[in-house]
Image 1 (cartoon, each protein chain N blue to C red):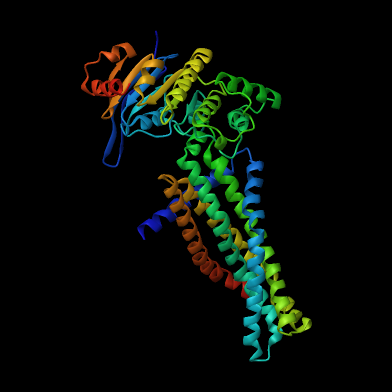
Image 2: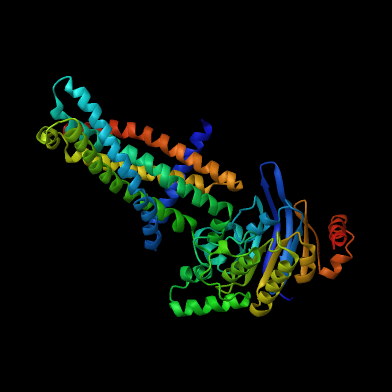
Length: 251
Length: 250
């Protein structure tokens, strides 16, 4: 517990350091784009697959439940609301944690134990500015974009299952989606995704940056980064949902 | 060497928990000389080197470089001071995502943005020539031998023509022939560029060959500071023990 709190404090302090460095020129566009490629583009396939089957299975389950009340027309709306508010940002966050968060922790951990990070510092290049800022900004930008992809592909998955396999009509499926899903639902999900982007990148950077003890230490740091990030995403999601409920209900 | 030493280490203390690594260490390093700091594994050599370049902060004491106390510097002031330094790490610490050329060009691209691509290319080529490496520009560090990586690391360290080059165990883990070539490289860098070299090592053979001054670190303090010739006749028990193991081996 004390270790967890200490790690949390470390992540917050590191986040402060990254914010200070992010404000300082130059903006490292090349590093930023490379990080966007690694975190964002590299995660598209896993996000698409996850979204497709999550939407599909959710369609099956909601159809099963709503058929009891002869309310299949609500399947599309229920799936769309669940996706935009919760499933898309959370599952995107978990997928990116597994794929890109672990890669960041491993890369930085390897750089730490092979003294490449010290080498940067001795060349009067701030490692936060060179290594961390581009990765954190890239995660902040790409997570909402990946979540949008998740929203669209997830809904497509639900649509195909509902129309082709469950026999729901197109009109029934779409009828309530536009009534129920508002811009606030989508924006809320995207804000969550941006927060999860910060959690993933800062946690991975913190664990990687503080790795020690050779290859074994790097492996342990990566594992800890993935576990910490995943748990934080689920905990923070609850509090963000609670905060956003008022906003969503008003809409 | 007249005048003030280029590097003055004054009463330096550093502990990690209950492990007291440096215990009031004093050492002067004159400009243009090669000083080898000898010590057993775990004696605190790397810790000392990291204090000189401001990677670690002491519990007490001072490290003066050109009269400026490194231990109180932060941020841009520390970066400015670090521009006087080049450092060759034990494992070379080359950026493995970059080619040899990009590694050597890195400090130039970071700090001398006015340089054209051609100028950067010329500087990189000239530094690689100094360390005896040509035709490996596009090779990645993983494809190089340990000795070649050390050479690239030195080329990167001297790219911006620093006054001081720090070497962290430059010959550790190398075979005798490669060790010789790395020693040649250190001597060449000194002759051609006139740099002050601080080498930490437990390799007595290399120390006796390249050093103007050898300083022996034991239990957190410098117990002997002498020329290689004087060191051979030292009466300090720790130095004698060190020398004996080396003479027995060779």
